[in-house]
Image 1 (cartoon, rainbow, N blue to C red):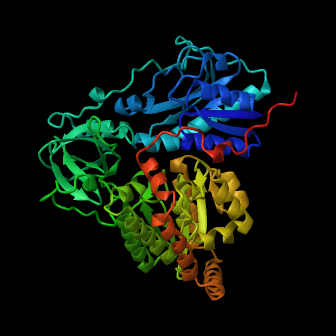
Image 2: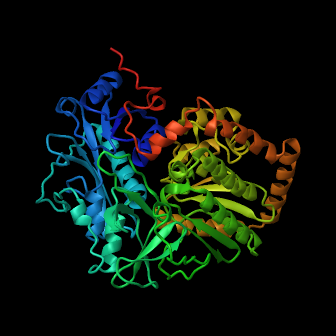
Image 3: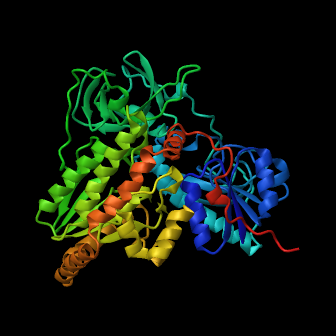
Length: 571
């Protein structure tokens, strides 16, 4: 079937719908909904059988939805309406939520229902929930709706609030007045809920040291105490503010834009407040901590028998110079431990997206910081690639892109949750890329396919990644089921009778590769090109980085998405 995706942005959910429908042999085109005329032109050009809007902030024109079936993916249960569905669900403490696929009509979110799926609400940020449970439910509902539409006999269910199972209602937009934190009166649970509901957009507007900032992200700390609202500690770029009964960690801030002033963007909180944190104590997190401890920790290490788990979770998946160096230190610790297998990756959400463009943009010399950042992540990749005394596994609970994905390819095995979206390319940021990808990617998928992946710049679903060798295993299920399966598989790998043979084969393969062409030669060649990308004349990286960081709205659908449009139906 020919399907056109209309989306306000090519975000993670749109990418996942694109990749999974294409994996099922549908002809899929993508167009950004940049105005009514743009949408009309897209429909005329692609002539689709079905239009799906995975993420749309504008209404589809009536002359489109009245002439062609248009499915809207709404992140709320049946009957839920309004633009702030997840925000209210998190702030209200909903235990279960849902996603509904409905047909566009004259009323926003009130069309006939083609499919819906429910999920348990995990205690996490809105963005993490959206990329994990919401995305899983959305795909379940989209695939059901597409199958029903293709069958031709299904009749969608009109929205009727008297029907059992229609539990939603209209909810107004969530404004800053609804999100405002009263530090002198609100308990930690309320503060955390508001912070999580606003992450990663729009943030919670607040005042720090006389200046207005949007607070992004929130994690409870069950031990630190202080005067409500005061900044009482810093850790790994985050600040900790006291509440009336505890404290919360806030990883990122965005300065409010002054009227007529330049744009602003999110930064690690301590970087955003540099110069305003004199005397605030640094409270480092131990690498290992009791599982019941509640605090903010980007990197942690734990062991289960012969398996060491190096877990990391960086806001937005970006990895700054300092974060890469801390992760390398933690990896060296894991290497020194008496384990047979090291598993890298967080328990849910992003694995990684590569260098930290926001921190780079904020640097006094962005080119120099780009160089420091890429070398820091290369140092980490080199340490993983040259590990011979243990087997290593990258466990991708969620999305991975660019240098973050290439970091995963440095391990011996890559395991991927079925809901992840992979983007093995750098070109859209004007970069050649490093992380030893010119060694690892062709070794896995072949030189020709590596060239296609890095040049086409399209998302890869787990099924396609498994077929081409980009990953070694796809693990079905939600985040909790995924973690349980990773633990079982890692234990089996550590105790496999073939473990000594696998370790010996790994050592021989590395020695042979080094003899053919030293790993350092791959790095040097990659970095020579990256150096030009960072500061060479005529390079596009500085402008593309700036547009990404400031979230400039595109003026047209990017070429890599329109390169292969749906062919017009034969007359």
